[in-house]
Length: 574
Image (cartoon, rainbow, N blue to C red; front, side, top):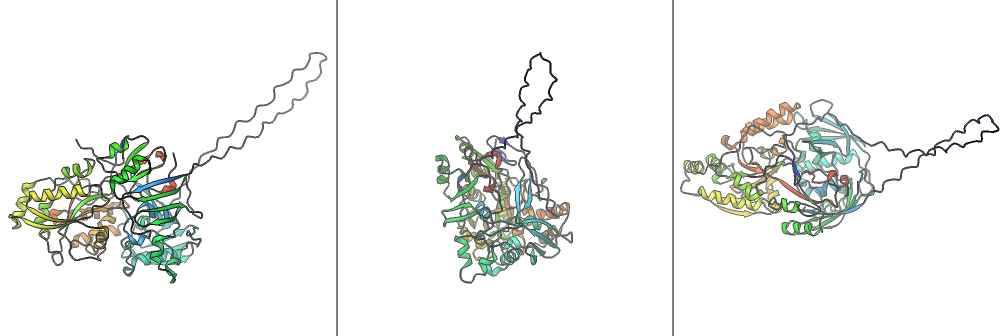
């Protein structure tokens, strides 16, 4: 029997997970907590003196004995450590413009206006203050948002102001800047500086009710660096980044390592991890060996077939974050630019029925996953349609559909897959090739580099798109619209043209009421099913395994998540 992941999994047990609800976004509440200090016990009074019986003298008025003042509690000594961290992916540079990723090294050095945090011991997440202390939408519909900003400094000592926020959004939005984060400001229209601590942002069309949620992955970089004509700002930020985050980066070595030290002028608290040796270790065997020998205290990308063994090592814990991604085969469906057999809807249906999802889950995830319910969205993401079912594996039906498409005698299809750093990638690719062979499709498969993958996503490379492309669409903020934007006709990656889907997306983006947004998401999910002409065969939830040294990290202070996988300054040493 396969092991089914429902939410966060550790070797101590399973925690039940459900689809996420929505967040109240009209205004932010800053929540604080504290503990009453225990008073030291007061000193006792002196023992009374006994006087002789004769001669009798009037009793003297007793002298009041005052308790000695309570001793001042000794200040707790904070434990300070250096954490040795191993990531399964590598960043092109330390500039956020260089990648669509949103990993912990970026969230350590840079801040966003808001911060997404998982809820300890419960489902869902919160959107908390970041560089913004509060926000509101004066019109109540998300057309305009006013953000109040905190007093903060860039790591080079310059003041952070509303002008930086305006600059950053305009920079990401401008396609000439070729930022990989352009999609994160897809609903941004314009910004106006009210004063140094206040910025007003106007959203496109009818507005964006979840704009503050999106801001949790819009990393802020300094205007004054990009205004400095004497330097190449992107090269400078790529090697010596300037941020407002909890850490300052140093000793950057491309593709190898960056050291993050506690920023001396940061507004963030730090619970004890004041230095992070952040290692990019894409080779799985090297990463696991580093953890086993103790050279690494925490690693990402623990393969599911090693999950239990690694978690059983001394002073070790393995955990999983709630899945926000379904791995899928995206299929070209644009006849004017993609000459592939997948332009025929019957071929796309055949591929969908020809996928043995449970077999692929066993191969790629050691059985620790769930089949996708015929949709892009996982159960942990708001917008998931719980009543959908996973397509049945039916190779005979797949063969008949191929025959109906005039390809009963066999066919060929080009396939691309980005599998580096994805522990499930090669097994799922190899398994799919075998399944296609069984239904009469020979494949020419290639493993592509991450830069090719990214250029295709952002429309910089439109030639030579394959018939099928192994893809995992992340909904970084556990909101369906943030993943579905990639399948919209207007997106540079566009696989298809479907007006009903695009209209439902616009409807969702304008919906203030979460119930209305869910209705629009349902329309999108139905339109995207392969049976209705959709472009993707959704396979399985992408389960994400981490390993931590419990004698280094206080496990109660860490809740596994995907974006970011860790806020190091908020983790306590063991």
